[in-house]
Length: 95
Image (cartoon, rainbow, N blue to C red; front, side):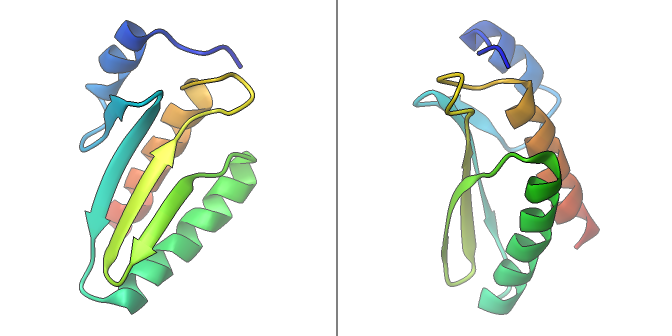
C-alpha cells in the first residue's frame, strides 16, 4: 500500500462523515449508551478488521470509543485505512 498525500486524504474524507486527519492518521470518536454497547460494537469491528487484515488503534473508556487508523508499514494513511473507516461506519449505522 502506498501512503496517501494529505490533500488526497482530505478529499477522500469528504465521503466519510465524522473522521478527521491529523498526526499522520485518521481519527474518530463514538459515544454509546453504556460500556456494554461500546464493547459490543468493538467486537463487531474486530471481526471486520480481522477479515480485512487491518487493525485499528483504539481505546475505550466506559461508553466512549476512540479510533485511529494508519498503515504502519506505509508510514501513514492508505486506502486500507479509508476502507476500514467506511466499514466501521457501516457497523455503527447498523446499531
